[in-house]
Amino acid sequence: MTADKPHQCDYLVVDDDEVFAETLARSLTRLNLITHIANKPQEALAANKEHQPRRIILDLKLDNHSGLHLIEQLKANNPSVSIVILTGYSSINTAVEAIKLGADQYLCKPAGIKEIIAAFENNDGDPDTEIAESPPSVNRLEWEHIHRILDENDGNVSATARALGMHRRTLQRKLQKKPRRL
Image 1 (cartoon, one colour):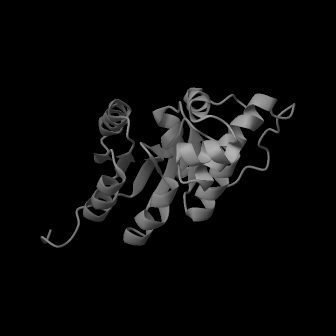
Image 2 (tube, rainbow, N blue to C red):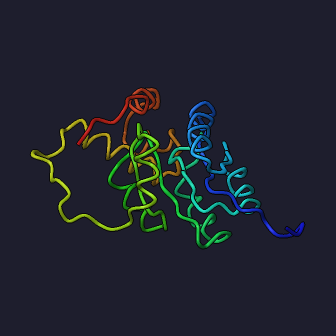
């Protein structure tokens, strides 16, 4: 291998939760998959360029940044890479945007290693996907709306609170809550 040619790996795990990233990488390594970790957006871009991973597991919320902003940059440096967004902050809006920006799949945390690997291997749509028996709750709709406005404000909590007409601390409390299932 020449010095200027990147050495390819199987997976790049991009998550600001270092413990989660290490745990996920360890699970992939046990399956004999070469795996690297990046905890910050710039680390992700550098690792993507250096290691040319076949697959990237990308967290949606990276500290104060949106993983959505990385998708196109990661694809530009590594056009054949497959990207799965893995997030604890799922919303319909971010799922749609992630796919439009070039992600292959979108998974909600918690997701097991088998589910994550299956997401990379199954890119076909499923017309038999179950439709919810009832519409989303008011709490879920509020959560979706808050995250859409947060995304429009590039993750800026103060600007989002102003746009929603609520106190910043109230918004921060709402953001700490886990999303309710659909």
